[in-house]
Each structure stands twice: as structure tokens, then as C-alpha cells.
Image 1: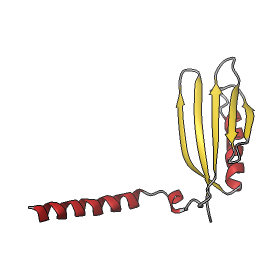
Image 2 (image 1 turned 90 degrees about the horizontal axis):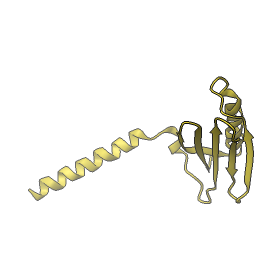
Image 3 (image 1 turned 30 degrees about the vertical axis):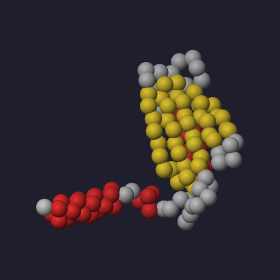
Length: 120
């Protein structure tokens, strides 16, 4: 009985390892460098009177603040072009987008992008 239980556990572990390997995205194949640096970008797009913004935190602690237009459902490309340009700028510096999270309420869309320096 003990041998059967051990064999079942080993088979399940092997299947689990195969499943995780199959679920890897192409980005996960790039290994972060040992002295990895992180850049965080957070966007707040707001309907109404308050201004929308994008804040970028660089590895050295530098904070960059950029204004975005008010959230406009009929012209979403106005803010998306600015956000797209920032993502492209960071990727051109050798960073890889490794995570995004977002949420919204009635009047705010908040998105956080995390970039990590990778070795080629």
C-alpha cells in the first residue's frame, strides 16, 4: 500500500511538472538578470473633473509623472497612444513587461504595469 501511494504521488508530481512546462508563456523563457531592475508604471484614467495621470517609478527611485486626458469613451485612443508610447520606450531600454493588473469603478480605471530587466 505504501509503495502504491508513493508511486501515485510521483506520477502526479511528474504530470504537474509537465503541465507547468506546457503553460509557460514565451516571455517566461527569458531569464531576469541577477541584478534585475524593476520599473513600475501606474495609470489612473478618471471620468469627470479630476485629472488622469501616469506615474513611472524607475530602478533608481526616480519618479516621473505624466498627465493623461480625461477618460473619454468616445476617444479612448488619446490616452492609449500615450500609454503605448511609454511601454515602447521602456521595452526599448531592454525591459520586459512581466505583469499587469487593473481594475475599475464607475469613474476610474487603474492599471499597473511591471517591467523587469532581462538578459538577451
